Image 1 (cartoon, rainbow over the protein chains, first blue to last red):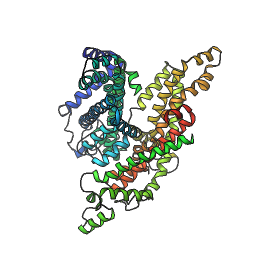
Image 2: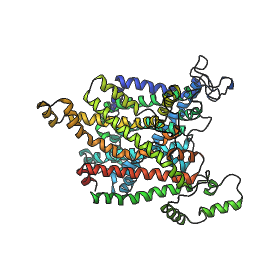
Image 3: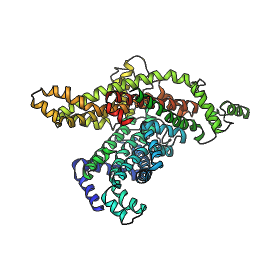
Image 4: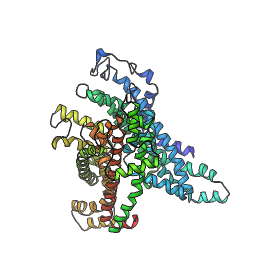
Length: 283
Length: 308
């Protein structure tokens, strides 16, 4: 089981698309983890003598309106943006797996209620759900994590449910049932491991969307609060300087776009290697 | 058809109930006392009681909900704390701008998206197809607000072709429509391309080729017509996003509209206004999805059976 999946992963990485995007994502994660050591300057070091400077040898990507080094803020911002999106999607996947598995396996009234709510949230743009939740929880990173987690919950619940329902009727599951296996054993040893691959690929693609959503909320001033940098928050404070220091906005946006493009490419490579395209489309 | 529409309308009632409940509870779920949230800093205890009485916060939750709902049905959404004007007036002022932008963006992304999808499918496997597919990937990954800022920088600041922001005349609509429509173009183009390629493999298309019909006629008159079914499904879902999806763009371009009204209200913690905006946006999504459903059912009788 594990061997087949490791093999699929290696297959994905060995393709051109998967290799390039995998390498970029790996570098990004390393940069985010080592942010305090990699940044040339502390991210909150203000130097009012060098406000809004264009990229130069001393400040490779220029400085912002407080004379802070943009490169250092972007590296630390990667830390914020990635940890927020990954945590949020992680929570969403775990909740979605639990809800979806319960609904798909047991069915009944609980399933109907959950699916009604899922269908209801399905028709709303994620940004609107997130804004509604931020209105309730209040601005800040915790609010953003919860808002993103709930905005994508419907997707993972529905995907897991469809998987479990189709797996439930497989012959090998019937065989396990007739051997006297309990619900817990069937769910955790047979159904969930087989339902996992498409959910994890969907999670990877959703992480890209979550990075955009985080940046959007940050841009609205509802995410990371100053002086903590995140890609979105940097663009928010940079708007006023758009005309004199466009790099403060352009570079974090470029970082968001590149990260999401590579996440998508890597997701595509994984879809091809794991052969889960049809499963993703069913849901 | 009429029965279908009526049934779908009836289904709206529970949805509306749930949405109104969520929006109503916003003011009770925010951290801190709802009365404190409604007060300006430095209010006296008397003013506090006044506010509690004015918003009915001294009564039970059920009672509060029923009063709020009753007012809502007469069109009274409360008063903005910061601006001191009725929420319904503020929304009525901003709504037309949102509709204008949303509908223009939907039309633009639909037409451009279908055209791009048809071209990509007709030149499948060539450089043209690669270019359009690459654009589709880019279009679905670039944050729309960033694209908006980029467009402002290039076309408004450096080239000076259009106004930087605001909503004065139709030229100020060009950049927001492009920024808001890009994600939609990518989506429509992707669906159209795949549907065209899959339809082109079917027997009846092979027969048309065998009969010697010019390929472009087959593509436009026969393949495209079949390929439109999934595109209409996707568009039906997107109609509901006309207002909701433009929230970000309005803020970037400093255009009046429900979205920028909501963001400002959220930052100023102006809760009655937040409630009003969220309720209107949610209703717009629901009504949009309903219109999408009805259009689809009118076009495809199979949908009427399946969904009723």
